[in-house]
Amino acid sequence: MSSQTIPVEPFDYVVFGGTGDLAERKLLPALYHRQVAGQFTDPTRIIGASRTEMSQKEYQKFAHAALKEHVKEAEYDKGEADKFVNRLNYVSLDAKADRGWDELKKILDEGTENVRAFYMAVGPSLFGDISERIRDNGLITEKTRIVVEKPLGRDLASAQDLNNTISSVFDEDQVFRIDHYLGKETVQNLMALRFANMLYEPLWNSAHIDHVQINVSESVGLEGRAGYYNNAGALRDMVQNHLVQLMCLVAMEPPASMNAKNVRDEKLKVLRSLKRIDTKNADKMTVRGQYKAGASEGGAVSGYLDELGEPSNIETYVAIKAEIENWRWSGVPFYLRTGKRMPNRVSEIVVNFKAVPHSIFGDAGQNMYANQLVIRLQPDEGVKQWIMIKDPGPGGMRLRHVPLDMSFAESFQSRNPDAYERLLLDVIRNDQTLFMRGDEVEAAWEWIDPILTAWEDTEQLAQTYTAGTSGPSQAIALIERDGRTWYDHE
Image (cartoon, rainbow, N blue to C red; front, side):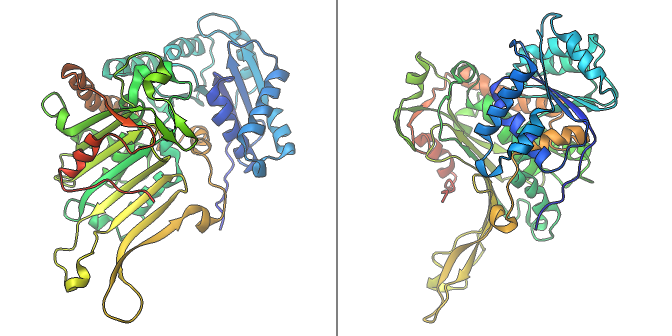
């Protein structure tokens, strides 16, 4: 069974930071795949823009090399690649000066009827300058959208400043704040599981669910991001956006429809229901960690401080016990966990149901386990429902804990699109459902800011853990003092 591909109307995608790492690894390959899938309608164009002096032919050569490196060999087609790079234009411009903007305007004026999307694949310090120059050069049309990459601030005040800067030029319905986690197929299947099936939603509450775990583990270290990461840390880099957004999708009330406003309204209610974590309880509700030298998949690796080359208390690992104070979730903790240099790269949501109130199976029921719903985002996207069954065969009643397993790759036997593929085209379709609204971003920071302040005021140290292990022992204590354990990834 294959999905239906619906073409979008012609568009011009302007990628500021068009020669950067994000454009090379993600954006250009994602757009190539959408062309191959038949979603482009001519005359569609992609326009790279950056300070780098480069001709159009040189940029096309750069893009060709990006496709060769970052598109799987089985999915690379030279004819399609040639067709794709022929769509590319390039403008060398300065975000803070006039250089190059006339040339960009000239190119865009040739496609005035097209949807016009500006992708900010640059640092947030340039968002304001670029937005104002887009406005001052008359580049905004009725079909204009702007796509903003994280970081969306480093605290509430800076997030508000960023929102004010963007909103001084663009209307909120033109702004697409991207979180690529929300574009993952399994994340959207979470909504399908909940709201397209009668099976789960009647049980999706504190009467039947014991707790929820959300885990995003990375096996890599700094990967050349030392400058950014040591000013951010795992709480800002991963929890404030990715993990909090996943928590919202798990916990939100059923929206009236899949309309973007309705979905985002429900997510906002979750954010505003989060119990405050501050200096009074941060030591009991949070753990921050930092990896030291150890072993990873490729062998021995250095510790964070060795890679950084200077002292630092910044966290590469965070575990949080979050609580949502509303009728549906009262008493149900959400355990959030993320870290670098973990044993495996895995992202998953584990919904742990309550145990049966009474076992009728005598000795055979001593090894009964509560049901679990495991939604894996990466790798090997899929859904796994753990249930108890009788072990086949004669000789009495023996119970086993087994999974009903659905791997998307095996079930649908088609390539699994990268999250950026969906999100980039959702911008053209003007569908904001999977993007964050400005008040969502600010509400998330309202919850995160007191944690950051508490860590600073109480001088909470980042506890060390050996690279290649599952984090500091304090994180194990965080969940085990509640009589629970972290889910063991197979």
